[in-house]
Length: 325
Image (cartoon, rainbow, N blue to C red; front, side):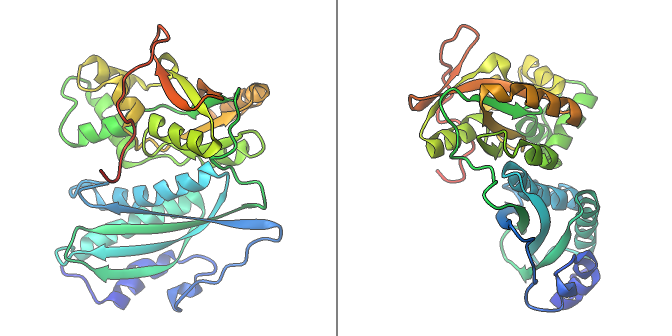
């Protein structure tokens, strides 16, 4: 079934998703009023078929991933989500059933994260299917977690496990024959459905000195913190947390620790904190039932070293996902 006209498409599938301030998508823009003493936080991400997801991926999971990677950016700043704007660029071959499942995925995550659609745009494109989401959040003024606050002596932490997103892409492309079906399913889900650590981000406000989410890989993203904070860092590779499924794929010879460190798509939080924050972080990890693993330390000398079990630097190349070049 071909797509209906733009405004009919909005009426059927996107107006039911509209949230407070959206004016039911009947006007040209939303009207938002931040709380007194709070600041607005805005982030935008684009996902493109064949680049950030596979053309055969389920539409509802494409929607949820597109939304969640934005919510992950809000989590990394310690912000509470308010709502989001959506732009869809759809090829003529896209049918209405795809849009219906896409909207169902958005509705599912709107319910989970208590947010609504505020507006956006729809267009036809001769290129690949492209989804752009702008997420809006709020945080107490002056309290946002930034990349630029790390200091020498701070410890480097990550939440959850790393490598699952990059390894899940291998599974989506037909890999993983050497591991059990349950392990393949775990990795595939982690690739298709990242988990924005919003609750953790809010709890890190006032504790963490710098933070971002792991979208381009631990090595690449820690370099971002080091550059913004004008410091260096050392990572102990033996401390990097891996899921049993990721370990199984490495042991099967279908992946490597280097890929777990540089592959990206994990959307866990990477943050720095002073030594005295460790007891509080241990309490947060227990209360959220979420591992927070110390993987390294911030140094005064510039540069980033990833060390093996003997303390020697590992050769990882440039490290991190690169959008260009």
